[in-house]
Amino acid sequence: MNRFQEYIMKDIGWKLLSVAIAAIMWFMVINITQPVDTRSYSRPLVIQNMESLSDRGLTAGNLEELKTMKITVKVKAQRTALDRLSQNPEWIQASVDLSELSYAVNGDIVALPVNVSVQGGNTYGISSKSPSVVEIAVETMSNKELPVEVKLNGELEEGTYLSEPTLSTETVTVSGPASLVSRVSFVRANVDAEVITENPTIQAKLLCYDSQGMEVSGVVLSTEEITVSYALHDMKQVPIQVELVGTPAVGYQVSSVFCSPQYAAVTGAPEDLENLLFLQMDSIIVTGLTSSVTETFNLINYLPEGISLAEEDDGIITITVEIEAQAHKQLVLPSSSLTLLGQEEGKTYNIPDNAHITITGENLEGIRGDDLQGTIHVNGLSEGEHRVLIHVDLPQGMILNPSYITVTVKDVSASAQS
Image (cartoon, rainbow, N blue to C red; front, side):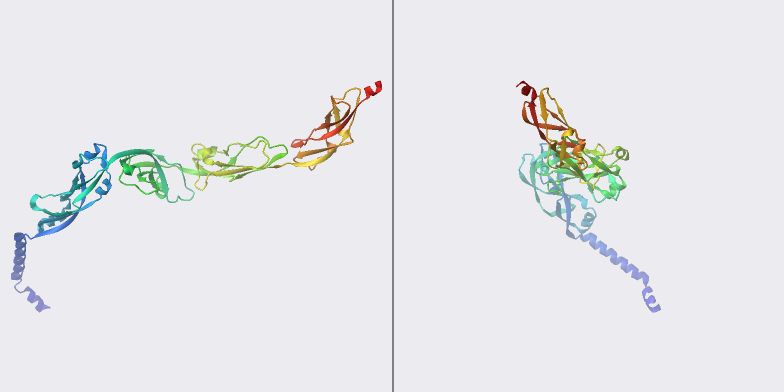
């Protein structure tokens, strides 16, 4: 090791001087000879003088494509100059001048040259550019106003309920080439459920979509982003109510009313939910019906202001009113329970010992003929036999089917005179 160190250190000054002289000579050669080289650079295309189209209500239909286009430029210069250019690629500008389209009209497709300049004057030379020409599709400018939709992406935490969103702007204007504007079907703000739960007011970027849900680029919105605000709500199960109007046909009755589901899951501010006791559906008319009827309701049409359906509730309510024929029972009404009204002097009125009647209604099991009282109106009857309607006083909920009895009238005054 000592011999090696001794070898290194021997004449160290001369050795260092030799290295320095070699380096100086190398740099001198580089700086004197200045070898020329060629390098490639990729630069974005700059659109110049767009107003030459926009002032005439026109635009470039492929403007979005032009803005994202990269131009490959090959630059020839001395190596040291290229080194400086590599450190400052922004010195290279590739542009297309739309002022050359002053006479273009809607539907024209015009090829324009790509202009390349390099800061530094004659130090740099342009060997090539690719592409060297770009096509401009001239189109009419168009615009339309659309409402802003909000889509909540992701799942809310269990037990978290949000109000309908409040937007800083309800509508926006979409502008751009007519072919692109016509494709836009809706404008949407996408909101992350996790973010909105932590902060119920956020700034959301607006995006344009076509009818298939594909994003449409290349158009301009009057507002690029909006403020979306939510309020945290409670949830409540509210019963459903419906009123029946009228009565079924004679001999029929409402046997039951089924509501599916019986409750609606709604959300809202605590004070609004406290005052909401039930949801009243439209009345169902049963007048003259002989069969069951089913009605379907959309709860959205019956929610008070500030109340919304919970996400798990589809909002469809089905109400079935079952109508069935009433039970009937035949009874024997003894003649002693019948009163003849309207009897005339000089005439006799005879009826059978018993009358047979039929009643319909509810709770018929416990009723008997002996418990009833009836009337027969005989005023104006001539001599002979007549079928006369029986009237019976019945408890509430019971109906007497038309029932008749034979009344035999005899004119005794005429017999006495003869």
